[in-house]
Image 1 (cartoon, one colour):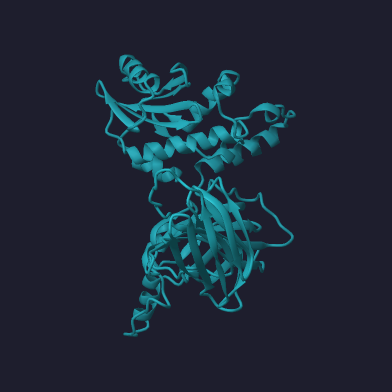
Image 2 (spheres, one colour):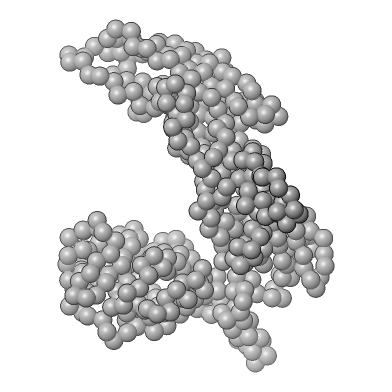
Length: 450
């Protein structure tokens, strides 16, 4: 990401950074170019920060562009005279807030700034040079911009100081700033790959799917020695078709065996040229836990069938019959299922029973919370009963909000994504590694209309 930001802004630059508090006072500023306009900065303070006019994230005042984000009670703005790539400026600003969070223990406010002016200016000088983004990796910055106890270092010998400076230089200018050579050694080399998906769906009263998709992310935990090269492949439809074409096969990949990835985003360690070539994800991993990639898949398998019959009997009673059935395989077990069945706001009494789980009326949410600890694949449960309503002077039509669900399903990817292979190779050490792949599906915005 650092290289992407730097290269994309090669023809443009940021003139300065401004941070305002909730009272529209300028707390701290750092200007990198002499083309800034203080009159425009004052106009931005009055028209946007003081007026709390945050409808638009960018503004043009006196031929000066202001691009800003909000962090708690603070407003962090970048100003420029050039035609910069706004998307990448915002990316830089959000990475800058991550740096501040790392240095101030996730408590970045006006008091922290005023008590750490020296540190703030040090960070401003390191993250940007002459208006061009430089180092925005908090772990790398902490190696040479120290704060608090980190600044109280013991005196190093000339040889140790030379080695430290060399490591810092390699981290800043090297090809892998996220992983420095010669610093990682493990007795047991392991790598964990977690595929986590969030299902979003809207289903109408006739149990017809109006919209469904899933957003997923692949997280990695690496405990590997040296500088390993990892490769793994997914059942991506495009990649599988390329392999079949290379073998001379004319058979097309079906939608059941392959997936269509959309909106893919990678960690900076992934070699994008290799992914564009054959869809193989190849990288030198960062140490510890990190998010390797995110994606979206429009075709997804819904985990549950939810059918409901909600009938209003006169003015004071509503009958409920809700059935939920697990659509996945019998050896899969869904956990921590919560089904929120809406009731009218003027509900007086709830009398419902279920064939499994527990039910509880929650007046603050105007719903019946049906909690099911576990549900096996193919199993179905039913909730039915009556809801008594209070008498109202004037009848109001019930809007019938949808049923919402929360759940967790281990080892079942809703999109059908599969890790086809995962290889780890360290050219110098040539060790054998232990590899784990886990899947987890959770509920996003999962609604069933009644």
